[in-house]
Length: 153
Image (cartoon, rainbow, N blue to C red):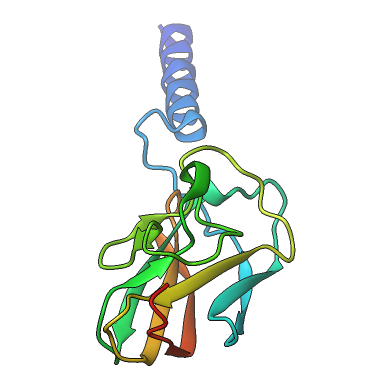
């Protein structure tokens, strides 16, 4: 009798350990990626300053936190479904909503950039952007562009 109880306890403990390790419930959290940017005001862009291993653009989105100007703000021109390393244009991602930075895996390299512009007819203004890690559901950085110009993209 005691042998059967010990076997049952062992089976239950093994099952609990499996569920915790394998994350069968889907509640595992992902630590935010430590991707870093430096602000360059001419042109209005964020340049990659630090890249963790195995990072790719499809893991991230950018969104507008605040804007003191008027007119839509855009990132990149969206060539090939990707917004990095592209001159800002109205064919790019409109930051009125969150913009995922690539649709397919695309490795991030140091020196790459995100460029921003404002549609013609708007007024220059300070823009605060958030870079968001989609896997971790967390903001990994806030960046302040002193004046995104209304150059008409």
